[in-house]
Image 1 (tube, rainbow, N blue to C red):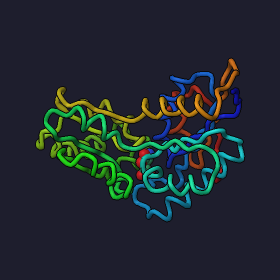
Image 2: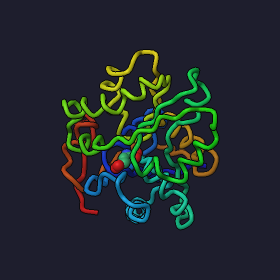
Image 3: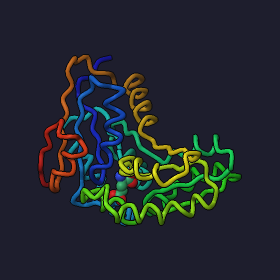
Image 4: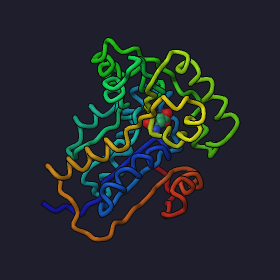
Length: 258
Ligand code: DGL
């Protein structure tokens, strides 16, 4: 089965490009369309109803472009809206959720840390996942302010460093051995986080797992492209500079109101 339509991805901003990187690495021939809804970032502070409405809007645009599959490259949108999206639209959706399972199954201290948005940590879907690991101590932390700083291009700022120290020290004190990054923006902070955490603490994000799941769904019921060259469209509704920077200026970024 061959299908040459693109894979669509959306996020509240530039963070989902960490997922895009993993997908592009695993499936280099697949074309993609990436929507950065930076104008409405952060999603993490919004109500469930607002997150669902924004997700519908993004999906409509990706469907206009005939995407064959949509990756919700945002934990907050996945945990608050993927059920509603699946109820309305026929296209297959792949979501991204904090990688609690590998951390919980491998933790020796039986204590793991999770850094995510308020919207993700408060969601029913996330809490159902937590309930599966009753013996694991979970140290939750809302990453207040982190997404805004990343969206403003302040990844390497003293303010970022200060916030990360404040959020991570209680986890170090609680003896976590895994830190789960529960927001697709946070992989861009791994160098700073690594510098704060002791080397014995492992950092996990969900990029590779989402890429493998995308491959599986294409293989089982959507179809791979047979094109030899892939095309990639990045669309933002805000200043394109930060998106261009995280893409290392290797791809064109289109500015459009949506
Ligand atoms: N990248 C989004 C996530 O994975 C960020 C959420 C936000 O905009 O607050 O949750």
